[in-house]
Image 1 (tube, rainbow, N blue to C red):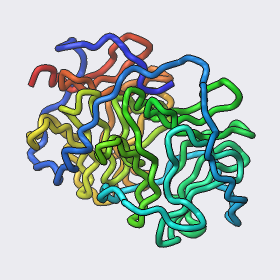
Image 2 (cartoon, helix red, strand yellow):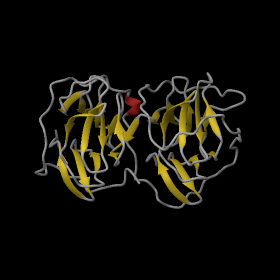
Image 3 (cartoon, helix red, strand yellow):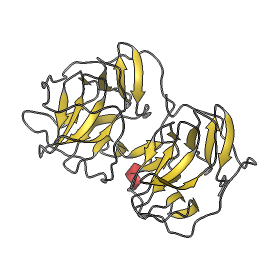
Length: 301
């Protein structure tokens, strides 16, 4: 599962590039400086009491895979719409075909029968859990973790255990957000915590945070991939300048910034199955297993 604890490194003698000279884009709100605890791997004890059976949405299912997302977190809604709820509450489960819909009826979050949980705008998929185990359900656990599961097997999770959730909200701005009982956002669909798994991307506006919330890697609208310390201090960048660019941690172990099919920058690493980790010490590291194979060399900065 993504986000599992690993031995962090500081100043390893691995390849790194210099700091770019572009300022980082405007940072998200302080409520989004997220710190999470280690994922619990125990068998799920999910409570379905009060879960609403909504029915099956008339949407064409999409294949597993995440879509770009860039909307900001808005204030937590205070109302519950009559009919279709827009909030998944702690302990509630969405089973295959069940969904939640935004107050303005523009956005639908559905647990598809193919095992993929997808956020739609009309018939356009905006985001998904990229899961494909048929018959899976999704639940907001009382410990704050959002989990796709089948029986007692966890297939995907948000890596947010240890929070006090008030609900997962399908917002009118198209964002999917988890709030705690103090009405603070602690997860949204465009925030990735600590680890970018093989095959996953960072598109315009998306962020990869360290667990302690002190550092973030962000894909800027100008095409630059930038490592930023809290306070908006840029520590490193790819120095790429094409609008619409995105970063991907390829399954072959190479971190690449593309625009279309053209590679603008890469880490030149080749260990299959490697992951990208944004560490709490400020170092951005590619790991093959527990072995670091590349880093930005920004630990302690």
